[in-house]
Length: 157
Image (cartoon, rainbow, N blue to C red):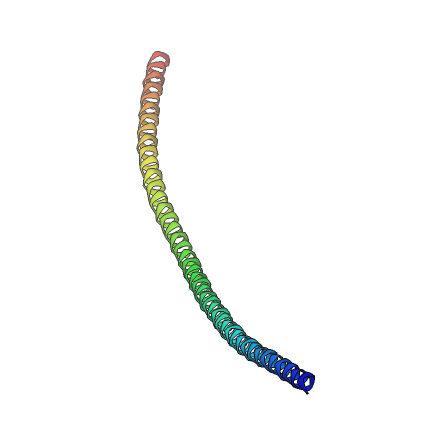
């Protein structure tokens, strides 16, 4: 009976040992499960934070692209306005050049007409003087001929 009691005590001791090990295993499994749950929660939180950060970056990039497009559009509008202004200025300058050329041509034409009139007046005076001189010379020549004829007639006659 003694050995029976020792066997029973040994079995009970082993059962307690198995129970202790089983409790430790269960505690370890619970700890591991809690750690895995905590790790999964950390992972999920990190994933949400990462997705939020990526979304914020995409939103910022979209905002910058919109600003860039607006700036490009503004520059294009400004360039178009400058091109229109340049065209308008070029047209105005060409109109002024044409007006100045017309004015210069009219002024030159008037100057040429005045010079022509002066030259014609001067030529008219020269012509009158030449005609007067020629008429005077002709008259003098006629008078000389008349005198010579009269002298010849007087000599002959």
